Amino acid sequence: MLLNFTPADYDAIRLSAKVAISATLLSLPFGFVLAYLVTYLSFRGKTLLEVLINLPLTLPPVVIGYFLLLLLGRNGWLGRVLEVCGIRIIFTWKAAVIASAVVGFPLMVRSIRIGMESVDPQLIQASRSLGARWYDALFTIILPLSMRGVIAGSSLMFARSLGEFGATIIVAGNIPGVTQTIPLAIYEYAASPGSEAAALSLCVVSVILSLVVLIFHEVIGRKLGKRD
Amino acid sequence: MEIRVDAGKSYGDFAMEFDFAVSGERVGLFGESGSGKSTLVGMIAGLLHPDRGEIFLDGDCLFSSDRQINVPPERRRIAVVFQHHSLFPHLDVRANLLYGFRRTSPENRKIDFDALVAVLKLEDLLERGVNNLSGGEKQRVALGRAVLANPRVLLMDEPLSALDDSLRFQIIPYLKSVSEQFAIPYIFISHSLVEMRLMADRVLVVAGGRIAEETTSEQLARSRMGQSPIGYINLLRLASPRRVGTLFAYPWGNTELFISAGNDQEEALYELSSRDIILCKQHPEAVSARNLIACRVVNTFESGNRIGVELASGKERLMAEVVEPAARELGIAAGVELYAVIKAVAFRRLG
Image (tube, rainbow over all chains, first blue to last red; front, side, top):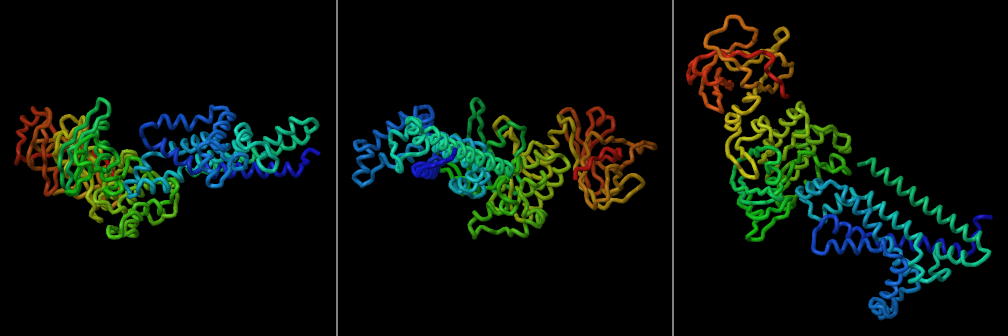
């Protein structure tokens, strides 16, 4: 009786997974590069960059959503450029991906950075003096040794995406089958009388997905921890 | 190898200024910790950026602040063996060894992998993860990895400091045989005078962020004899022992040395402090010490308020020390014949 899903619910679950996976994959390369920059390089404006990276952590997601709307909307400077190219982002699932990626980005960068900071700098020096250029050392030493942080960051980003609500509803709307992810569907059920069971079913799905991600995170973390 | 450095670097109040040129195949950098040795090594290897100055290796400019030259570490071909092995934990022994080799251009690959593995006795370890190695094995792999990068110079930055005493002297023969067999000049950095004596000919003494002295390891040991709490350490490489009761007798000079710490190994390294040698003008009839060696004084030198006495027995040399009044009373001078009295327990086996 509990887990009784309508086709729209299945759409929401599928969409949630799609958005979370896309947001994670989209932000991973950027997150890795930014984590590298703030961990290993010193340059002017580094503090400002760090503040900007962490800003989504403290801003209300609704505010982020609103800024994205201004940026990507028909009159936004990026939105206008995209419209010329025939790309529409606002109120599509792509907007949900971007909203999730932005909101989860600080978590990802932070985790990767912690992973990179745990790499003994002398290992990097050793690789350089053995003939590795900086990018060679990055891919053969830093990346494998900070893999724990990369995986932790990715799973946090994935989990955060599954729960994203505030920014998503503003920039992607709440269109069933198009942009309605699990949290948005629950919100809609909660607002309509007599849908408690349906809301609860989706809540259970949410809990299960979160648990799976966290268990995966722990298991991988422990495995890599043993190796080091 | 010829290295020329005229470079400065400051950390807060600690200003380092190095200005020297040194050539040789076995160069030592000797100094207390915190004297600036590691900074100098980092600057030569390209891992630290000098504030100003120039660094040349065999005539090639590696760094010049005036000419804005800073050759990155990967193109200097200077390999470093660190105090802590710094092996890559995610790679096995073979992959660690080959890390530098694979990044060396083919025309520079002069060292054969199998030959090196044989010299370092790593055959049975190749497939192992580096976390499953003992401290000495790790340092051997680290050494092999550096050598396989076919460097122009090997920088050994206190490679033995993290090892305990018995292990240190097991590793030294590897360090020597690898650099000799594959003809790689090295700079050996240490705060241990004994290690300096075993590993280096020319020695630069680093103190307070400067090169305080350029000398030889032998000269350094003599000049430090007077202040050192352990005196001058005689290093004796002895071979072919013979068991005599509970002692071991090793042929040495015109006689034999009786040593209680001996063993049946064909060759062993012993240390003997200059302070553990008593000098007698005449043959003492009955003493408990097991070694009574007739020697000739080769020369004497002053160090602090001590007199160092270099003794000869056949081709072998031994350094003893006495205080000035004793030297006067015994009339110790070059050419004088003396007896050296040494207890069998005074010899300490190093490896």
